[in-house]
Image (cartoon, rainbow, N blue to C red; front, side):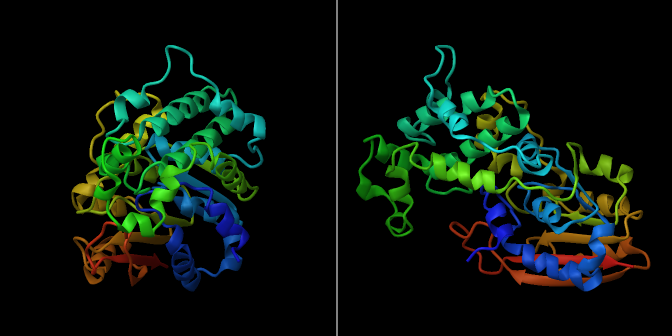
Length: 352
């Protein structure tokens, strides 16, 4: 049986690098150095909120305040839907609006992404849904409807965490352009194909209930959309959680390119610069050098370029008199495609 928090976290869409399955591990690490009964008097900062798991968890824990930041527009949709929003939910009439016919001038997803990513019927449903979601006048409901469409988008591809050309064979089979016998037999076992063959709106009510469950009262949340290096010196708090892009792994900009166009409502986006954190550890060093004014640090990282011992040593350079402890956990963020058996999630904590 799921706990209330687990149900609330399911409101968040699948996200590259999400920490949902690691929250208990992160919470345990923090509790070792700062017991939970102190949290009501403390401010928690999530500098790279990404898919929102850690910020939503912090909101539910009763911190005095939560500060969430991420430079990406996709993260801001989740922040508007679940972090700053304390009570607004979707109604059945909100959902019916997503299925209306499109105006003549609207609709571009089918032309841009079918069959390279979506089958034609899935693309047509996405054209309607994303267009009408973006037209809702209430900012919280608009963000919630876009989140519903984000969930549906993940259901319309075989690999929910990697929207892109990897779905072409499945889209072509659904459109009658390829034999079903050409598809990977594993997809018959994991129910991907059953999901792809369902009516396009079959999951709409389920997704809305899922999303509504994530709306809750809790700690007040202050949301920013800024470069982490620029904003960190201006933020005041007690606990700093850092989950920057990991050096040597897939960049968020490339992995979320299709999703970003859907959420923005246009294919022509300004070219996204690859995060300096994806390129190496120089940006991480610069970030830690800006964090002296915040007492407790929690840093999540991967072992692609740094071992746990090397990451601990890097943190100690900037930690001053803080005690530094580290933990490693075997973990695959993309378990359905990862062939590496040595991937680890690293957690380093620095505290007074």
